[in-house]
Length: 178
Image 1: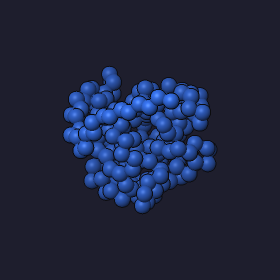
Image 2 (image 1 turned 90 degrees about the vertical axis):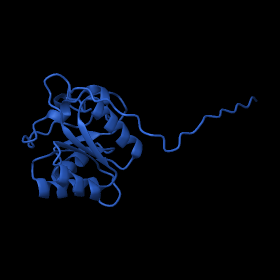
Image 3 (image 1 turned 90 degrees about the horizontal axis):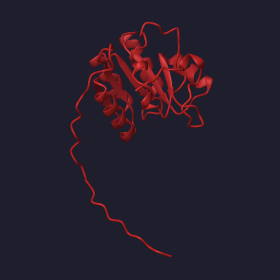
Image 4 (image 1 turned 180 degrees about the vertical axis):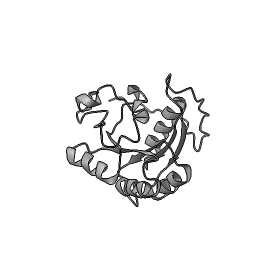
């Protein structure tokens, strides 16, 4: 029966370190990306990963402000969590689609990966559906998939339901997200 006590200093409201953007992968353009995610840690992680990949990133934690920012910014890509407070990600996608049509690529971020979940996302106007947690090591390719090719849905999730790093289908092989 040993007892150990560890005391670590807390950094309350510590300033966020400046992120030095790098260039996007060779041959890929810098994108304007909006992240709509209510979980602060997930939102911050996505912001940092995308900024360090050279993208311009904006973020918000709820659906209503997500729609407002999307209309204001007209981003290339909008990453939308399905389980948002207030209006859910499906409604966010419908509202953005009604205002911006196909000018932005909408990617659903979801913890639900059944076929019916993907179909519901596509029916709401999403171009892509990614299963959380998204694997950041698989590259930026998902962000550069043709926005105007909505009929060819590639993405089924970067992780399978068992936590393995396997594509959800053969069509998904090699297509990363972050």
